[in-house]
Image (cartoon, rainbow, N blue to C red; front, side, top):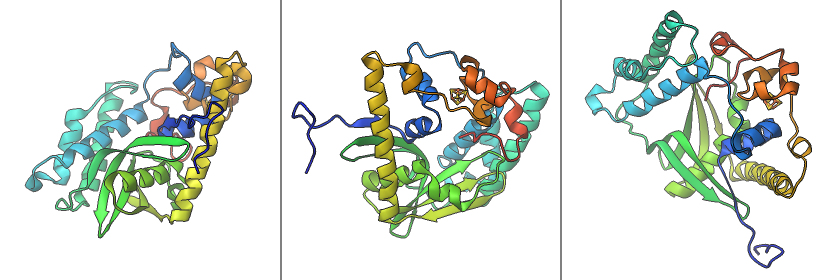
Length: 285
Ligand code: SF4
């Protein structure tokens, strides 16, 4: 039976993307900076590794718009070249080197795709509701394999991934449920496609494991809602949205506004520093 709020009305749903929920889990202060403070605090400059990720995603999305006979590896590289940006790079020479690296990456990946297997969705928005949440998000690619759908998420960072990354990802689990509800077909498999290595890290959820993720998401939503409501009635931003400093703070867009984060990370990273990270850098997408 649906629970009613104090005023006898059904409680409002907490509308969110998976990224909104994971931002709170990572750092409540960053959540406040990103979603609540208006005007929002200034962010740092663009990251070069984010540029690489964004352009690779765009090229692979547009690849499926090409006529079947033009869906080749070199065509993916050409799409990347056309969409290339230089935001965050140290200089033109570095940007040029990385254009080549990213071109190799998408060409190799597209060469391994079956161009006849059109996905059910590319950059597909999907959504679902629970008694607490209204979740929506955009999925890189939704494949159909047999009678089931598969969530495909591209990763372009150089950090190695494991199956645990696919299994434990709240975002991927919520995407699977969103695809199932929006596209009305079973969807329990989630896959991380790591473009630099070509590895696919997959996990087959059960309905129980998906529901466990929903339970986590609902807990996060209630924490966020409680903190936000208390802030609106005069609560302390510092106490309700505490910083969660770690060595990763050097990659935070708001590190310049956050003394605790700066102290923990030894300073803000250069915008191109993520390009050289082998294992400890941020995920660009
Ligand atoms: S620098 Fe670190 S502690 Fe500060 S807001 Fe960013 S993630 Fe949170």
